[in-house]
Picture 1 (tube, rainbow, N blue to C red):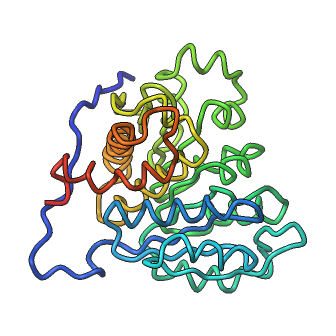
Picture 2: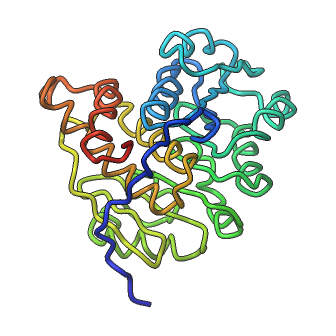
Length: 292
C-alpha cells in the first residue's frame, strides 16, 4: 500500500468570544514517580500551554506536593504508592477509574517507572479503557513484552517513542530502524487503524500507516531530558481540543519543534532545557495562528 505524504500543518479553530474551559478538553496525566516528579510537571504544564481547558495530574502521593509546585493551573491527585515510590496500581484502581471517567484524553508514561503493577495498569489502559491516549516513555516500556495489544485498540492511541523505545516495541535493532525510519514507523502504525506512531529524532516522523509527515522544526538543543515529556502533553492537549489523533500529532510535533526553536533564540542550544520549550509554546502557537 502506498503512503500519502502529508505536508499540511493542521490548525485549531479560532476561539469564540464566549469560550469556557469545558470547550477545550480535559486532559488526565498519569506520570511521575520517585525522583521523576519533573516529568509529570512538564506534561501537565505543556498541555496547559497547548490550549487544554483543564488538566489533572495523577501521580504517587510522595511526589504530588512537588508536582503541584511546578504549575498552579493544573490539579494534582495523589495516588497510593509502592515501596519504590511508584503508583501502586491495585490500590489506585478505584481512584483511576473515577478520574478517567470525565477525561477527554489520557497522557501516560513519563517518569512512571517500571513494575509489574504498572505494566498491568498500562495494559488495562490500552485494552479496557475507551478514552483516547498518548503513550510515551515507561508506558511504552510496559508494552515492550506485549506490543500486539496495541493492534486491538478500538480508540485513538498515539505512541511517541524515541528509537530505543521503538526498538523494544518492534524487536528491530536501533541501527536498522534509523536506516529506514519511514518504512519502519509506517509498517508498525499500519497494524491498527487506530494507531499513530510518532518516531522521534531528527526529522520526527508521524504516521498512521496510510499518511506520513516528516517534521522540519526543532534543533539539537532539544536533546535534553524532559523534552519528550513536553511533546506528550502538547499532543494530548490537541486531541482534547477535538483534533483527530494523526492531525494532533502532526501539529503537536511541529509546534513542539517550533517552541524549541524559539527557546534557542533566548537560551542557545547548549543551555536549552525542557522548561524553555514549555515557555516557548505560547509563542509557537501564536506564530502558527492556531489559537486565533
